[in-house]
Amino acid sequence: MTEGNLVIQLSEDGADAERLEALTGQLRTELLQLEVDDVSALHVGQPPPGARVFDAVAVGGLLVSFGRSAAGLQGAVSAIRRWLAHGNGTRRTVRLEIDGDVLELSEATAADQGQLIKLFVDRHATPKAE
Image (tube, rainbow, N blue to C red):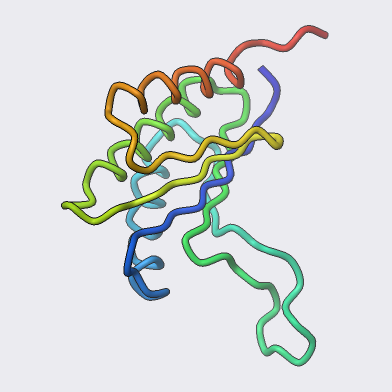
């Protein structure tokens, strides 16, 4: 398995930036307890000219570095799946991306989510031929 980074983008129907920031912070805290190298805010590049920030951050975005650990990737995806399930009737969506491979989950059944996640993780947890 090559070193990997998982890009996560969270959204929740009706959530403002403050709510998304809180949800993202909660998920980040949970992810940091797993077998991952790092979890940081997702940076989206240079801020517009004249902006007073040094780097723009994507609201609801996280970057998870899981190194060479398939367990780290699986653990992160499991935590994200739990986050989706705790919407209490509010529609939540999560977009996962590794090396241009994208998986977006929202209202899929638990069984469908499980199958999609397994395929996604298997694609990125399998050693690549040299």
